[in-house]
Structure formats: C-alpha cells, structure tokens
Length: 135
Ligand SMILES: [Cu+2]
Image 1 (cartoon, rainbow, N blue to C red):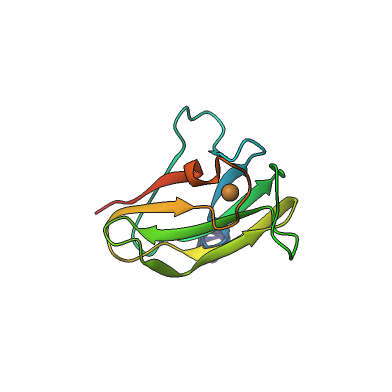
Image 2 (image 1 turned 45 degrees about the horizontal axis):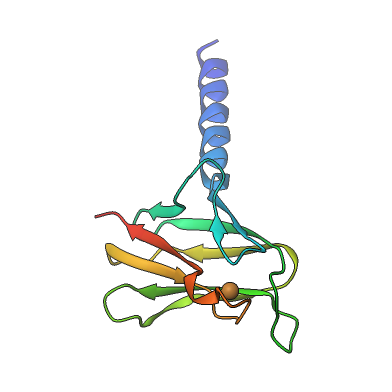
C-alpha cells in the first residue's frame, strides 16, 4: 500500500516537472500595417521580462506601405536604450504572416527598445516599443 502511494507520488512529481519545463512564456506581438507594434489589451505596448528568461516570440506581421527587396515587411530588433547597440540574438526581419522565434531575455536588467529595421512606410521611424528587463 505504502509502495503504491510512493509510486503514485513519484509519477505526479515527474508529470509536474515536465509540465514546468514545457511552460515557456509566449509573447504575442502584432507588427501592424500602420507601422506600429501592438500587444492585445495594452494601450501602449510594452514587454517586461525577467533576466535570462526563455521566451517564445510569436509575431504576426501585416504589410504597411513598402517592403525590402527580400520581401521583409517589418523588422523586430532589440537595442540597448542607453547606446542603441544591438542585443545579440534579437535581430529579426518579418515576412507577412505569423513567425515564431525562441529567444532568451538579456541577462542585464534595464531599459531596452524594440525597433523596426525595414523601411515599412513614411512613419517607419515611429515603429518602436519599450522593453524592460526587471531587476
Ligand atoms: Cu517598420
């Protein structure tokens, strides 16, 4: 009886551990036709993460006025807010539709900014979004 209970308990622990590993946080972003990033339910879109957190970026892109020669319609590149330098591993160009990227949050807490790197319209310069790594 005791052995059975122990076995059931162990199974539960294994099951729970697998579930925890599978739970990578998904961040859904819309790169829209008006050259703006949007996040459902947020008036001013902003991404807040924990240092080194594994993330799945699911980005839906809709074409604005123009695209680059390779067919990219928007970009999604993370910069340090302080000096506008690029964060390695966070530089993506977007084709129309849904794309997913597995990324790891920067280890350094602070302020970052997501910028579009494709000249997508006259208003392309305004296509950016605040990104914060919590201490
Ligand atoms: Cu753009």
